Amino acid sequence: MTTLTDLYPSRGATEVSVPRQDPVVWGSPDVPGPIATGDLRSYERDGFLAIDQLIAPDEVEVYRQELDRLIDDPAIRADERSVIEPASQEIRSVFEVHRISEVFANLVRDERVVGRARQILGSDVYVHQSRINVKPGFGASGFYWHSDFETWHAEDGLPHMRTVSVSIALTENHDTNGGLMIMPGSHRTFLGCAGATPRDNYKKSLQMQDAGTPSDEALTKMAGAHGIKLFTGKAGSATWFDCNCMHGSGDNITPFPRSNVFIVFNSVDNAAVEPFAAPVRRPEFIGARDFTPVK
Ligand code: 6CS
Ligand code: FE
Image 1: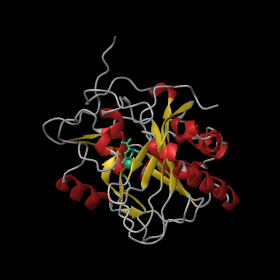
Image 2: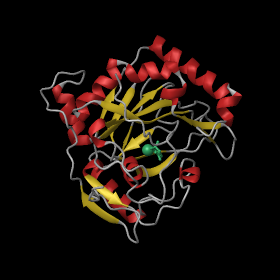
Image 3: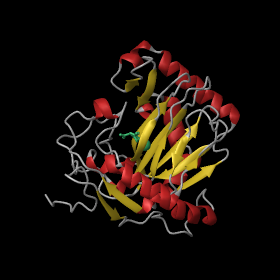
Image 4: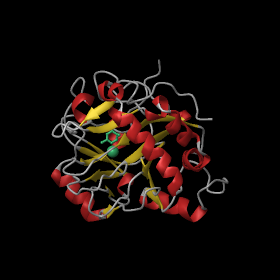
């Protein structure tokens, strides 16, 4: 078995920053697709692309109802795919919705969604992870700063940065209810975090991440160099962002829920291998092991 070199060392004794060694946009710019060339260029520069309306308001209603159906189903609440808010005991997230819900499976296959992922990644793609984040109001907690790729490399074994996420708003993202924040341009630096990955880390990290958390010094440097952008938008708006963007979101203490569906597309040429910095693989509902391309 060829041992892949670890281009992005992390979870060792000390924090280490290395330059990105992978392209951001893998497809050639003149490949036809839903994303205009200018937008592809700004995605390359910033690490993200915001779309005012990816799906129409009447479609959002379908997905909102499906989200409500899922979180009201006691079997879903009891399922290991559901992450419960520690304080309120409300459902925080449900993973693998693209497999447990035909409605969300259709969203993944929608050309407006998978077509953009193929264009950015320059290949067929499969879903590495999907989740609905409910983020109800009245104190739902956010996600501290992190790079998703740092986790997906260390714990799920994705070798290269050839992975893109899309967060589709199912309720309005105001500037007050815990929206997504990204440091523009941070995707071009890989920050390897200090601290070994505990076994069964996911049981804690999906509520409050510990391993894979950047230091205050690193965050201060990155925020100073790149700034911070807050994403707002109506239900149906979407943010595409590179797997290595430094991002996070605040708590939502307003009465307005901030629900979204989050889909992670990975290139079929970047299929998961063994974790680069964790004792065991995470469960398949978090890090897929079925690499069948989305058709
Ligand atoms: O660990 C993960 O895979 C998840 N954690 C966060 C905070 N963002 C990415 C992903 O959904
Ligand atoms: Fe994340």
